[in-house]
Image 1 (cartoon, helix red, strand yellow):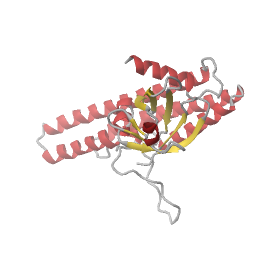
Image 2 (tube, rainbow, N blue to C red; image 1 turned 180 degrees about the vertical axis):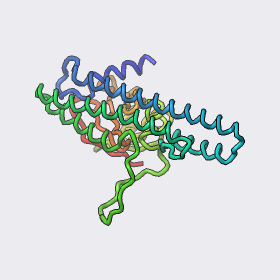
Image 3 (cartoon, rainbow, N blue to C red; image 1 turned 90 degrees about the vertical axis):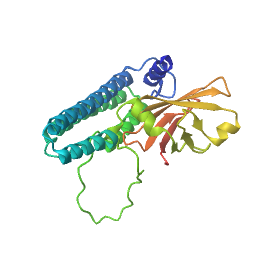
Length: 268
């Protein structure tokens, strides 16, 4: 889709630039290349593991072991839908290869983030460095792999808000995955109130509707969303949302491009 290509270009050149418009930022472009490589690598690793499990199922089925086939199918479904990596003996080898691949990809992206922060700082692009570092922290918090089981603790701290029934971050590795995940979700926006990303590709926001604005949303990569005002005004029509790795917050530049918004949370 031509509009998707334009949107992706806008994200690369505008999303995390300093307040004043500048020429193409090589630091951000290199980071976006690393993000794309990570996304592509995660998608390929997921596909390879699913294919490997299918092969194992076929082999086990030839032995006539119904219970084993059903158990393997359940593991496959859990991984495909929620990102839960298989743990059975039959899938141990292929699951281990998957984990190593994803971890290697994550380390490469961590290195790219570190380099982007360093280079932005050297260029005195402090706002950009701060935004990149904040995005890096959310990436590390969400992770590409499920975190190891936590040790028993007596801490009384307030638990992190959870959203039952939604996929784990590891399962959202393409823009198509993100589109499915976001359909129907509600997010903070600011003084105007919350926004809802409807399944039909449009944004529900009461004040915007009162103003006569018609706004569409589109996932343009695994963690990026483009908002486009299709009707109601003829300037400042785009806003790019950078979704956190753990899928519970985003950072963005407002439609007027003069304000970098504070991080906003997902509400449901």
